[in-house]
Length: 393
Image (cartoon, rainbow, N blue to C red; front, side, top):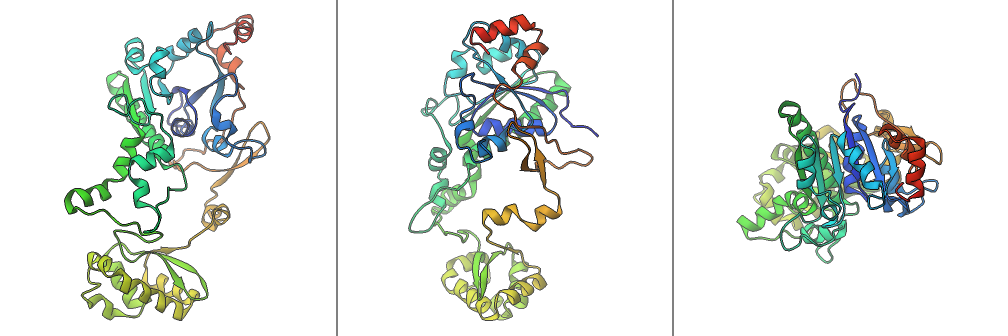
């Protein structure tokens, strides 16, 4: 079996994280992604750092399997080349700043009128309308606007999530919506406009806290490494070893934890702990008790009892533990990808599908495929040279 998106052509006018993540996964599924970059400097994520043998960690993560085309759409001949690209494209993805696409004549309405089969995907912080539509948006700002930061951290101090969740959420929702639009086009022949808004995505993820406020008139308290809606849930000290991370999700698991792991079946009948809502109210009494029992029996015995109880648990790993995680190694989740600085170790993508190989095409150098793509569009070597001279490429 080949790749499910073989033959799908994607044009991406993108930078940073959200749109590149979306198109990276389209490339993982076999799409031909032409990544348009500025001739001077390219995607600014290329310069976040130089930690990966001289390349940026973010850029290496988000851009393998694409072809890099340097193009100034404002220069003489640049827009014509882009129009040729769009004529044969299936999907156009952009995450330009507010209003930039429209000023360039690349707004969704104009593109859809010119290319009826084209799927146009716009990623933005706040959307095209509303009082915030002109605001620039970055991950930290969206974590704050959406209330995520208000739920994260300790009771004493809020904290942002340590990875770019607003960008990742938007990239994955855009990816999913594009797949749905491609599926619909297969039957209707019609393209679509996919508007993916970072605030919408994080607002969706904040639905449970929002419902607590809407219907319970209660703002959830920050709980640090514990959970503010489920108890016991989080890391608990276990004597001579590292903390054990518990994830008790239902009453059956709670009963097994008490009976087999804690060896305190009486706790299930204690009215303070009979339900999850009760355990939240009395967590200050319950959680020290769990830690007291685990610490008294030691880390190894705690793990043995949790396994016997079939209660969900895990470890509080560091990044180096992830890189060397035995489960990733056993499932062969590491592979090599090419780059301008040589082969690099990379994680396999998580879009596992039966009989579909892992695509591990190289990370493109800036403008590496410019002349190749221009030639595919019918430009002669002399015309390509002239475009370079004019600063369009």
